[in-house]
Length: 145
View 1 (cartoon, rainbow, N blue to C red):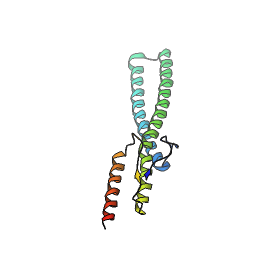
View 2: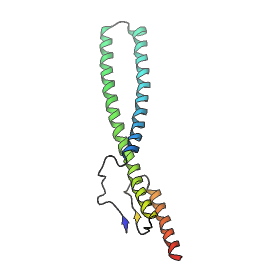
View 3: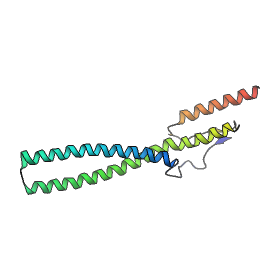
View 4: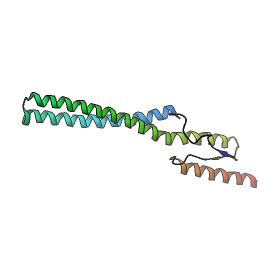
């Protein structure tokens, strides 16, 4: 008997909510830190440009404010994209991990008949194949006894 979900599509955004939330939080925080570093360099550039090149030009300050609005919009869009990418990536890891956990539990209860089959493109496919091979070997060993 093969262990397979009814549909090949994922039904939930969060398969293992706690772990996925941590994963997404790390990705977003790293992006924010990179944005802060970039923003600091950006502010330093404008500060130097104001003192050395531009002076107190009101037109330049209007340009600076407009550039800040654009930079803020880009940052917001970037954080949304990072969050979505993190969610998709975490699903490719934690979805199969949850199925592998339940499979190992069933094997521990003595059910050697099932095989775990993951979706195409799941990142833990080599682990699932190794587990299937191990369970098959255990089954053969137990039958010989």
